[in-house]
Image (cartoon, rainbow, N blue to C red; front, side):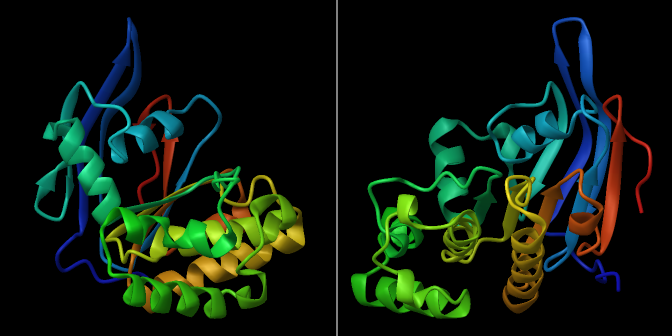
Length: 227
């Protein structure tokens, strides 16, 4: 069921990106409402990764605008971008990117530590997420002691624990078997519904795209199927 877009939380307007003479993104435009899940699909080389990098402020478009709430991401300097990512964006990667020397609980807590959240509130939030993802009994485990599915559940909790406006997910089930992948997709769907967090999900997987309210297809850097 589509999410009613009263006031989009995230807006992309005519974003263009070139690498030398090659145009990688060509006037890409779309918006995302709070709580909406959008699948970003398309063949390899269509511009999905470049677009995701621009959306997260890792790369800058050559023209166009990217707005999260009241902030123009494409106009922020490095310090402001780092602050934005700490406060308002969560990211889930294909290969988890957990810090290997931190426990599961410490990995989840990291965004809260960076924001200076008091320790008792931090502990309560981390425990709440560990309970929610079914890994309270693994709180003290290091990433090397966790399965791939467990690591991705920890990564999702870490992405949501600081209550961001937007989650960017890059092939979050691409490194998992089908059973674990299905569990991760169910968890993403449930948690974004519960927290009313917008999700942009880059994927080649039909199963992953199916948890989204709509999909945006890229081909040769252009949106060819906004729906």
